[in-house]
Length: 368
Image (cartoon, rainbow, N blue to C red; front, top):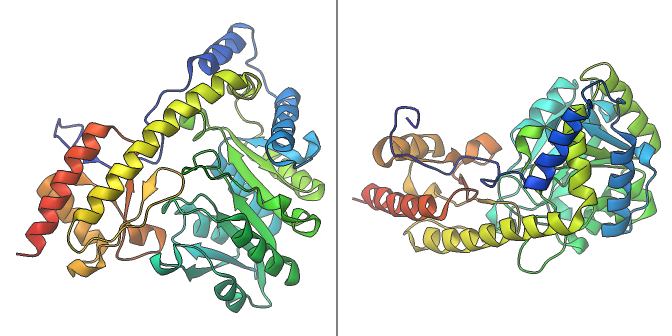
């Protein structure tokens, strides 16, 4: 519809609508001109791995060796490497829902069974210790945890994460901590790195992050993985036989993002201020609509309103919304949560305002 020139208000995009900061682009361009266009070391450029290790030490007090860092072609691939390194056929992996769409499929590709545990808006879209422990079986090997969350924007407090970590240690489980949205947290709150919750959980945690959300570098395809040495080694071997290495000159852009901290902080602050403003406006407008209930997200750039009271399944709701009002949203069932919508506010204020007017009109028509 967009390609045909139709006026669609799209809330579907899962990427910042900001451009990559100029200083990062310039570092990449300089690398290309300098001939940095050959193969790189499989786990990533050594200066970049050192900078990533330094970042974790500075931000979280998480002290790791550069050899524990793997730079991959995207955060998605980092998640997949971590799952492949840990999971075997016959294992189970617990995935709280709503979940990012790729988690169950990655687990299946490893020959492992995804065990979906629904966590609705009554628990703030978060896995509770009681629900977690009741879902564990003798086959459980891995917990996949995403905070801040795609699709809900939910964030776990340090205390909530510590309670889950204790259960993981008790039952000898590994954790894939997907922290790709770690720097997009609002209301003065700070991110918590799961691996820093104690020495025992550190031995069992694979931390995934990257550059796409923090630095608006989605198309650069650069993810990071940090893990205990044996797991990192396994991930490096897997990457060696699959993707080889992340794009060499793109890694120089990532290195600039970490080294030129003052410039990076200015760019991130601008992005966060816009997201925060949009988050609050979108939340307020959604809750003005009769029969729509929406929690205020604490991070990322999504809201996940409950539209179950309209008597339509979420896919029909989205299809009719698009056809009738030209508003694009993603049905919650794509994330294992029927009766919800994912709305991204990584789009312009104008589109959000116009889209909310259209959504309100559409919802009103359903009550007639």
